[in-house]
Amino acid sequence: MNVKWNITKWCKIITDSGKDEYTGRDVTGCSCRFRLLDDDGDVYAYGKASGETFAPLNAYMSSYGCTEIQYENQKTGKYETL
Image 1 (cartoon, one colour):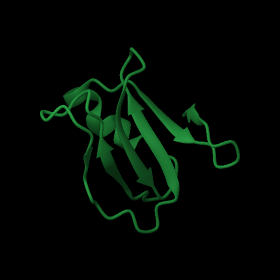
Image 2 (cartoon, one colour):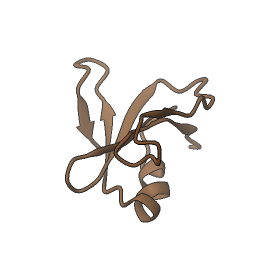
Image 3 (tube, one colour):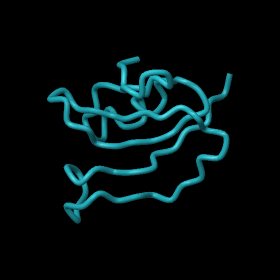
């Protein structure tokens, strides 16, 4: 299964501007919200995917040091580690 995903917001903790930066990328057909965190629990990015996948974590693990991906539980609205 090929899951589509995109980062929608980079958090100010890692941006050069020191501000949250929205990407404006196409997330059509993506209903699963996720976020990427480092090992201290700091959120680096938010995004959307067409299904739950480790692909965003794999893409940014080396370059940004992300160690965890959490998806929003659509029933509770809380993020849960995949």
